Length: 535
Image (cartoon, rainbow, N blue to C red; front, top):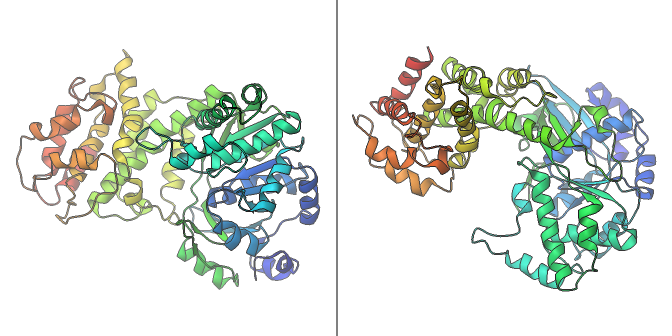
C-alpha cells in the first residue's frame, strides 16, 4: 500500500488493515479549491498535517465545506518535494492513544502544496493569484515562534530582512516579507478583507504577526515602495486573531514506522531535510488536541467550531494560554524535565510511573496551582489537568524526553511558576509559605545545574541561554558538601528575571536552600529528598 491517489482507489487492502480513507470526492474538492480558495496555510510541517489539515478533512467529510487547504512552504522546500509532491498531498495521520492503541487515517484535505518564493516563478505567481481572489478568508501559519522575528539578538534587523525592507515587495527573501508582498497583491486587486491567523504555540501570537507585517509595510510605504494606503488597509481590513494551540506531534517514531510496515504500508521512509526538519509520509500525534481562536475574521471563516475548535474573544484566548502555561501543563512538564534528568529518565511517560514524580506534579497542579488558576470558562482547568496527568504525560507512544523539555529552563521558570507565586502574594487569603513543592522544583533546577545526576554521574545540561551565567555559581560544589550554600545560591535566587520574583524578598529562598543542601548531601540524596517531602 502506497500513499498516492492512485493507490487509494483500491480501498479493500487499506480497510482490511484498519486504515480510514477520505470519504469525500477529492478531485471535486481540488477543483472547488482552485476556483474559490478559502484557506491558505503556511508551514507544511507535522503540526499542520496532524491537526488543522485533519480538522478541514472532518468538515469535508461532513459536507460542511466544499474546499480544502492550499499549503505554502516558505522555508524548507524539501518538504514540498520529498513529502507532498511524492504523495499527492496526502498524509497518513497515526493517532497514538494513551491505552496503547493507534488509529490510522489518510488525510486528503490539502488541495495543492507549493514552494512560496519568487525564485520559483510559477509557484510564486500561483500564490499571488490566490491572494487576489475575493473568496480567500484566512491565511494561517505554523512557522514556529522564531519565524515572526525580524531582528537578531543585537536588536538590528537581520541582513536579509534589512535588504527586503530596502528592496520592497517585488522579490522578497524572508518569509514575512513574502507574506506582506502577497497581502499587498490583494490590496492592489481590490482591497478585499482577510484574516491572518498564527497557529504557533507562543503567547500573543497574533500580536507578534501583526507587528511584524506592519513593520514591513510601514517601511515600504515610508520610502514609496508601496502605495499610500496599504498600511491603513492592514489596520482596518486585515485581522490578526490570537490563538492557543495544543497538540503534540513529535518527530516520526521508529516504532510507529515498524507497526505501519507490518500492516503493509510501504511509504514509511523518514526524511531529514538539509534544514534539519524530521518528517515522513506519516505523522504520529497524540489524541488530545485544543485550538482556541479569537473570533475576528473580516471575510468569514471555515466552520471549524463544528470540529471542536473554540472561537471566542481575545481575552479568553489569553486566559486559556495562561491556564495552560502557568498551571495546568507547562509547569508540570518543567518539573518532570528537571527531575527526569537528575534521576536518569529518558521518557516523560516513564517518569509518570514513578510514584514520587507522579505525586510531585499532582501536588504542583492541584494543590499549589489550582487555587490561583486562571479559569477561562470555556475549558475546565481541572478537566484539562486531569487529561494531562492521566492521558497525555503517561502516553507510552509519546517519545518526549526530559532532556528536550529541559531546554531553556531559565527562560521558563518566571512564567511557569513565578506567576503562581505572584498570585499567592497578591491574595490576602493565601500565604506564599504554603508553597512547598514549587520551591522543591527550584532547588532541583539548581542541583541540575551542577551537571551531576543522583547516581553521581556527570551529564550535559540541555542548551540554555543563561547556563554560562548561572552554572558557575555551583560548578565547584560536590556531592557530600555540607553547606551552607547561601553565598553560591544568592545570585541565582535573587534574580527576578529568572523566577519572576526575588525569592529572598518573599521568604522562599531559605526553603530552596534547605532543599538544595539536602539534595547535595550524598549520592541518592535527590530521591531521598523527594521521599521526605512527598510521602
